[in-house]
Length: 416
Ligand code: UD1
Image (spheres, rainbow, N blue to C red):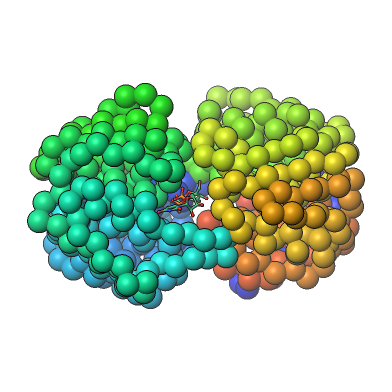
């Protein structure tokens, strides 16, 4: 299954259930290291990154049993603080194992996760905050290691509300000695889910105000059974697909209150959105309008992960629009492929200008990263003719089965 084949020019009509959240599952799996016992995680998405995380946990001494979407992690015998290079270099989010390993074993070492195709991805904030909690960190550019004889709580203020750095501090702080007050932390919903999981395990975490957490360190977290929430980015991707291609899609289990910036934008573009119990009905049967200027940012601003999927809808909307990317400095890579399909997007520095009113033409395009790859699949749905999106493995890192889901929405999409 190396590609996705799409027969274009069709609207979406149907119902799809939204999978469990990748960005909630990964840190919660990491946090399970803090618990010397068996944590049961339900509704884990069946995606490559979750699989890599299982392998990493096994390689450091955890017992990991997987049955369908349920993963049981027993970290009682956790013994090794060295993360395997093979997976660390494949999955950047392995950096979020630093906090829990320092908490449990007092040491961690991993290959430098490096940059990636969506821009520079330094880890200075992770290192700085963990150092403030007493860890001695060494980073020679290729290998990163840290050790501590006992993490201690302290007052910290992040220079930027990094999601990963916030998660690392939370995981380090829950078993640290003393109280940690973390300011200017990320407010993405996944932070709330991580805290919720840890609180179920007995951790003491209080949200004092937006962007401010108070964590009382303690010994002795206990195991729990936890259900991973639905993936707001997957729901948002399918919302963008319906917006771009037109039609009526029921997104079953789509999270409520986690995608408001996107939902406001979609309404400006002419979509009708209706909450039906735990589902979201998306209707776009009239003209597609320009949303004007959109800018990505930290939650609750428009999510960078949905920037590329929205670009596809913008390309076809009536009138010009623009997208400013403020989170990752290299996240317009997909524009080149979209332009090969006729999108006519121009990128200057951090802003993409989208002329709109374009009819995309199907063709052979290549995914180079996860969300850009999903955007190309959406472009294929809207395009005249047939599209083949190559390098499907990037898309599989975040979507259980994008072909299955889009077929449920009535599209003609196949494994290529
Ligand atoms: C997480 C999400 C990713 C999402 C991103 C932003 C997971 C597994 N991934 O990634 O899907 O796109 O949040 O919402 O949850 N930065 C630094 N120094 C650091 C850390 C980050 O400069 O030490 C910068 C990054 O280069 C980037 C920005 O901060 O420009 C945001 O990164 P961050 O919030 O840390 O994203 P991730 O946690 O890696």
